[in-house]
Each structure stands twice: as structure tokens, then as C-alpha cells.
Length: 261
Ligand code: ADP
Ligand code: MG
Image 1 (cartoon, helix red, strand yellow):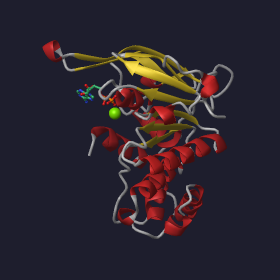
Image 2 (cartoon, rainbow, N blue to C red):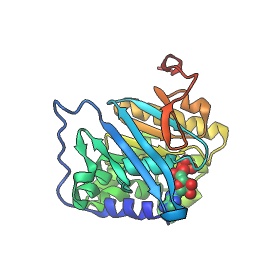
Image 3 (spheres, helix red, strand yellow):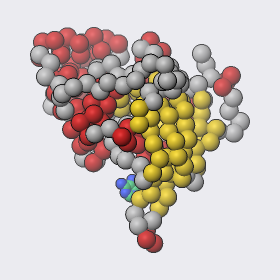
Image 4 (cartoon, rainbow, N blue to C red):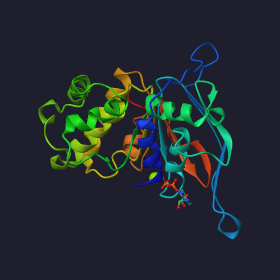
């Protein structure tokens, strides 16, 4: 299991006071990164993955990040999700610098403010679809009956009411990813971060999963950042940015007018 996932699960397990943020007047962007730099290794093994990334994401925007494998897309999303810390620079969530928050508040941020969709669904195969979706609620101490009821609503939203009792391991790849999306959003986070969410799916399922994410993004007024290899899907977002050699830039040739609204 990846360290990032361990951290996410630790975040889900964490209980306690919810993260209070300044959602008011100064919070013009939901996410802002300033001078975000990430360097792995040291000495001759040093690798600068992100040089100095500045990004502003407005409320209800859906942004795609494209870039070759190894360009740092996952690294960037992990920094925004506070699953990892930058070498320098800052991530602001509604004007609050994540780097200034104590670990307990970061756990609340990961748990309550971020819905993270992974390339691999990471469902528990021997639990039902409904139990998997309910898991973040159960880990926060919700009562089982209530958690399952909320999970059922979310399974309805992703079109899988009929599969609620089926073991996650028995579902198709596309269905598993839809369950994972329901699980990511069951806490009603304002932010949806997705790391190659359609990367393991065939074209038809990739399309269906993207359509679902776009619909949920709109109906729940989410702010979403999606890393993807799939140019056609990326170009259906409000903005497409390209990550290359440590720099995040608007994708040449893409105009926002092309994005379907
Ligand atoms: P992408 O998601 O675009 O494929 P990644 O963010 O996964 O790119 O990786 C960017 C680069 O950083 C790669 O060269 C990768 O090997 C390296 N990298 C990622 N995570 C780590 C880590 N925890 N330790 C060392 N190097 C890493
Ligand atoms: Mg990646």
C-alpha cells in the first residue's frame, strides 16, 4: 500500500474538531499554490520534480493536468491534498496555508475537505459496495445504519443502487471506480482531486466515469483537479494545464471555449 494511501486512511480514521477555515471575504480561490517546489533525493540523486508552481483554482472550476508519465502530476496532487509536504512553497485552501496547520488539522482537511479518487480504486474486496462507501463515515464514528443509508444515497448518485449488497471484489472495473468515487465524496468535501481516475479503464468505461465525475462536480458545486493522460477528456474540463519539466503551464492550443458547458 502506498504511503500516501496510508496517510489518507490515517486521515479518514482521525476524529476530532473539524477544520475551521476562513471561507469569507479573502477566500477568492479554493486552492492556490505559490512557489510550490518538490525535490526528491539529495546530492547526485536529487530530482527537481516541481520547480515553482503557481496555480489559482476558483470555486466550481474543473481543471485538468496533463503531462507525460513521471512529470509530477501525482506529486502535485498529493501536495494539494496534504498527503505530502513541499520542499518549499505553499498550498492555500481558502486562503489558509496548509503548511502552517498542525497535523491534526491536516487530518481534518484530508478527511473532510478532500475527496481523492485514485487510479486504482483501493476498495476492500470482501466488503459490499455499500460498506465500502460507508467506510469513511464509520471511521468517523457514524452509526452503522445511518452510514449505510448515506452510502445508499451515494450509490444511487453513481447509478449503482442495484449493486449495494454485492462484494466490491465482484464488481466490474468501471463499477468499482464508481463505488470509489461515491466513497471519495460521501463526506461531502468541497474539493475533488483525481489522479488518472480513468487510467485503468477501457474507452467506454473511461467516458462513463468521466461523465459521472463531471456531473457530480456540477451538481455538488465541487472544485476539481484531475490528472489525466486522456487529452479528449482533459479538453472537456474548464482549463487544461500541462506539467512538463517541473513547470505547470496552460496547454498550447486549448481554449476554454472548447470546454463543454
Ligand atoms: P506522474 O504522476 O506525472 O507520472 P509522479 O509525480 O508520480 O509523476 O513522479 C514524478 C517523478 O518523481 C518521477 O520521476 C518519480 O519517480 C519521482 N517520485 C515520485 N514520488 C517519489 C518519492 N516518494 N521518492 C522519490 N522519487 C519520487
Ligand atoms: Mg501519477
